[in-house]
Every structure is written in structure tokens, then in C-alpha cells.
Image (cartoon, rainbow, N blue to C red; front, top):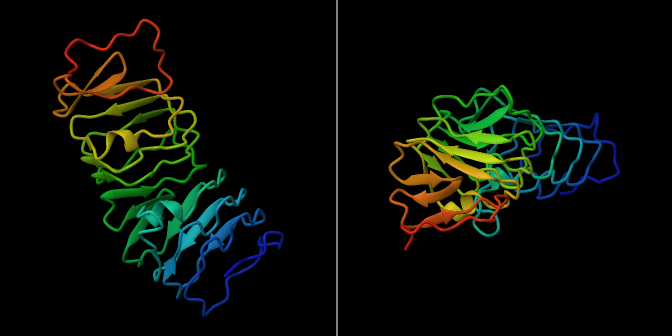
Length: 239
């Protein structure tokens, strides 16, 4: 149920025969560098290694599924790891029926949904696979290397929270194909965000001077948190 915070986990192995792991089981265990979930474990709850500051890699076996409907209804695929600033890779067994990993990033099995980008992975030089149609809930949470988020053409949906707590994110680009599920929730906790950009051919949104509106500019949808309000005026079309 719980691994002691002060115990050395650097060479410790989860025993065979374990089929489930408790919530917060490895929370605050700073000696944990690699968390290898053994074959036979069927599920992982939320916050399995919350705030394990030196965790770099997680390995999922073929048998495991990440728990869902955590707490307030949020998806535990996001919450199973949180506040792990050095986490740079997740690896998934090739025969896992639910997930796959590509270049250390977690996707559903057919790579149409990007589920989780590790907090400590450098986004510079990384490209989202063309198979991705949906970006999952809080998929880029706390990714400090993220400064400009260019959602690629072909992505249709963005779930709640694009990149919350990503402290260096200053700009988001929305292509012609994308619709945000919830405008407010999609950009929460982005205190450095200065501007939105939107493809001219997007049928849902328009950006003017970095501010996000609906297509015909009758509704102001989102004002970036870090944008200056000095001398800025709401357009007369907004009703």
C-alpha cells in the first residue's frame, strides 16, 4: 500500500505476484529513479508517485490499465503521475492492449490520442505523430520546456487542459481542424500565456491581437493571462 519515503528505492523491485498498487504508494520517494511496474499488475491508481522529485522513467507492462474516474471525475491517466519535474520517458510493453509509447510519450493503442507528455521531457525538436486526432486531458501539464504550443493540422479535439501549470508557455496556435472542448478549462493555470494565434480557415475561432474569439467575433472567449490590458479595447462586434 505504501513505500516509505526515506527508504532507498534505487535498486528495489516490486515483488512478483503483486496485482495492484495503492494510491500514493511511491509519493515523495525521492530515491525513485525508474518505476518499473511488473507483469501481472492490472491497474494503477492516481498519484502513484506524486512529487517523487527524481523519477525519470516509468515502465508499464502488458497487463496494466491506468485507473479512470478519479475523485471528481477526472481521468486518472493524467493524475497517475504529477509533480515529477525530471520525468522524461514512459515505456509501454509492445503487447499492452490499451497503450503505446512513442519516443517516451504515452498514447492510446492506435496513437490517435496523445495521453501524457512527461513533465521533464524537452519538447524542442519533438513532433506530434500525424496519427493524433485528440489531445487528452492535461496531456502537457507542467511541461516547463513548452514555450509555444503549435497544435498540428489534423488534430480535431483538445480535451480539458492543454498544458496547465506549464510555467513558460506564452503562445498557443490553433489550426484549421481543431475545436477546444472547453475554452476556460483548456487554458487554465497558464499564467505566462500572452497570445493565441488561429488559422484563418478555422471555422470556430478567430484571434485578434492575441485574444481568442468565436468565428464572427461576437463572443470574447479567452484573454491571455499575461497579456497587457493597457490601452486594449473590446471590439465593438462583441455582444
